[in-house]
Structure formats: structure tokens, C-alpha cells
Image (cartoon, rainbow, N blue to C red; front, side):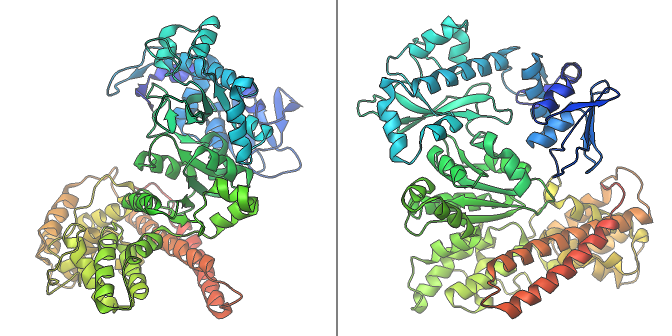
Length: 622
């Protein structure tokens, strides 16, 4: 299994599994009592129940709930309960049971055996030391800072806020007295090579991983005579702390994110505190760096559910920096299969100040007023122009068109084009031509006239984007098109109900359209060549060749093809359900009851169709 520095040795995985006592791990989360026959029983942590139906059998190392059907070994329990990956569960259990994991076949330098555990132990001791110092006379300014922002002693204790003494060597002396080696403290980023404490005279927040292990710290400048110029100072990169991956508050929000299928991304430690204390228990923040693609992948994995469930809400300041942050997130919005939103307080207050000035309900209302990310970005792009003037509208269009043109999911472009046309007040086709021009020029608006035949028919395009064969989001589309190219004899007479709208990537949609056209011609004896020759697109021809030689994991049959087609249609219907739910969410039933009722009926019909397709997707797919 792949871990932080390579693949975890199989023997170590087995050792962790044998050492971890399921009754201890489960018992830390569930109150268990003797049920006789060597079994333990308790209330299931995975669904609401009043009568215990959750059973643990220590002799077999297994758990099972007779109410909801959840079951497995100690690793499966930790993965489900803490909403973590298999690797994270292994690393967490290894830390608990004292197993030193060996990582093999990894890239880059290898951490010495046992170093991770030693660093985590040192970090935990440091966190306790810092928290204890918060009540001392040296931390008066730190306590005053917290009080001015509405955080009392219980809030500080809940989040583990602490204080780094001003002495310069207090932490190092304390940890060495506890038996920690100087080299470990340096590698943990707690002590500098010269012997000075890394953090001095600052308020600190411990940053924890999925297993509630302290992996690092974030420190804020409080004192006027602080010699470090940076307002915030974070633990340097260590074997356990990677700033591009960690999220502050994730230890508190992880389960809520998985349960509610929502993540709220704020901009600072005190914003996370304010959000959680206001009832937004899905709030997290990046640490010492801007929110990036690795953070996005972490949150996307935590959301769980099907490929299109859940939502991510970003809170940005309304100033230029906040707008720039939104545009950056929009640039890798393709990482999310969920819906992305932005919540901006009109007064410009961040969640911490908003709670302080207007109360906790205002923070909850801020998240409730979220707007789609793409709409926020487009609105900011066109807000600089005078839309009452023709030249202003044209300039606004040229500013916003590259944003829409950069969207990789072509199935969304049409809707964005129509919305942009409405926002600016221009003809839809004029907007579509400018977006097409921007997309063809690599996302940069130009003054050239559009091509005579803009994206009219997918099968006639000559500049199709090449699809990544490893992109998981497109795996079903590629698998079905591969069946169309290689095994037309197994397709249903009506193509199993598949249509062009079921393909989100233009290249796969183009191959589909070409196959439709080829099917209406006399058979030439070479089906794949017949498909390729219907189009002048070099990309399409090359893609057909690539699909024609790709192997299947096993020989497909008629049932396999039908299940694959149903899966493709299921994803299409799921996207439609997500879109309709979003529209319902933005429609006020009190002011527009007829439209709300129509959409609700349509949603019921889509859900029924989705359920039917789910029943038809039984079997393994490529």
C-alpha cells in the first residue's frame, strides 16, 4: 500500500493487523458490553439506533452491524469511522501499536525507521507544553488577543491553542528533559540547528492529521518586538508535515464532511474556530500556503458518496486578494466532481469578525447564502465594465469568455454561455462565438473573427482536445466508446439508449457521432476505419486507432455491454439530478411556486430513472 514515502511493506501491514486489537480500537469510539459467547455489543456508530445491533467478535477480529450491514476488520472500522484511506488507517494503527513501518519503492529520500513515530510523540509533548503555557504571565498578550476575538478559555482548550515562551530555549530544554533526542527535535521543526526554539513569543495552533496526531503548528505574531517579520509562521516541511497537503481543523471536521457531504474552506485559524463554534463543523483552512490542488484532492476524497454528490464552499474576502483567490480555485475547479460555491460577506468581514460583531447565526447565514463559484468569478470579471455601453459589454465579454472557455467539462459550457449572456445582456450566439474563440486561443481572448464552422458538429471538428486515458472521471465514457469501436456486434439495436448528451468529453462525443454516421453507410469490412473516415479531424482518427487496440480486462458479452451503457446513462442522469437540485436550492418556493413544483416533479422522475439504471449496472466494468 502506498504511503507518504513509498509503498508500505506487506509484512508490516500484516503485523499492524495482527497487533491492533479490534475491541480496543472500536471500544474507544463505542461503549461495548459483554454479549456472551465471546462477543461484545453496542450502539452502531454508523446509523441511528436505540437497541444495540452492533457486534464485535475479538477472537475473529471482526465487527458487524445487524441493523445497517456495515462490517469488516479493525482497518475497515477505522476507515469508515474516521473517514480515512486504507494507508492512513495503517499508519494510524501503526502509531498506536508501535509497529515501525517500512516504505519501499518510493520516490525521494526515505525517512529513517521509526522517525515518524518519534516526531509525532515530540509534537504531542510540544502541544501539551504550549497549551500549559497559555495560562502563564508570559502569555498575557496571547490571551488578550483571543479574548478580543471572542474566544474564551473553553474554546482555547477545545482547539488546543497554546503559547510559545519568549525565552528562546524553553521548549527544547523541556523536551530534552523528557528524553527526546536533539536530532529528532530538529527534524520535527521544533528546534533550530543552533539550538533555539523554532517558535518564540507567539500564539500557536496545533495542526493535526486524520488520527488526531499533531503534525505541526501554526503561530501568529502577537508581540510588537517580535523579531520575525512574518505575521504567521508555520512548521517547516518535515516527514509528517507537508503544507501543500495539511488542512487545519481536518481532525475536527473530517467525520462531519463525510456525513454531510460538505466542506467549508475558510482562510485562517481563527476563522476555523469561529465557524465550528457557530455550528459549521465542516470548516477547514490551509496552513501557511494558498489552497491548492493537493488540498482539493484531499477534500474531494473526504466528501464520499457518488461521483457528483456534495459541495465545497469557499469563503473569500470581497477585496482584490479574495477575488484572485477565487480565480485560482476556479483554475483547478476540474479537480472537483462536486458543486463548488463561494460565500462572501457583503460587509467584507471574515467569519471570525462576523461572529464577533453579528453573532454565530450570521456565520451560518454566510454559508447559507453561497453562490456558485463560476458565477462569482464571472461576476467579478465583468463588474469592472460599464454594461450600459456597447463597448463596455464587449469588453466585459472578452474578459469573461476565457474563463468559460477554460472549462474542461464541455457539458457545462452551454449553460455557462447562456448565463454569461444574461449577465452581460448580449445575444447568446455572440457570446458563444467569443467563448469558442477564447477556448481555441488557449484561454486568451483575441480580436480575430471566429472560424466559419464553430463547434457545430462534434464529428466535423479538426481541433478536438485529446482525452487523458487515465482520467477517472471519464473512465466509463472511454470504456463504452471502446466497446462501440471494437464490438459493435454486442450493441443493442437502439444503442442501449445512449445518446450524445451522455458524453462530457468532446472527443468521445465526436467518436460517438462518427459511429452513428458510419452505421448509416454500407459496411466496408473494417468498422473502426469506417468510423475514422467519417471525419476530417486528425485527433478523432488517432483516437479511434487508440481505442481499437486497447485491451479489455476480460472478454465482454452482451450483458456486459448493456451494463456499461446503463452505467454511462446513470452518470448522465446523476449529473442532471445534481444540476436540478442546485436549481431547486436557488429557487424560492414562496415567490415562484409553479417553477419550483415543475422542477420538483422533474427531480422525482430523474430519481426514478436513476434507481432503475442503478439496478441495471450489476457486474464488473473496465
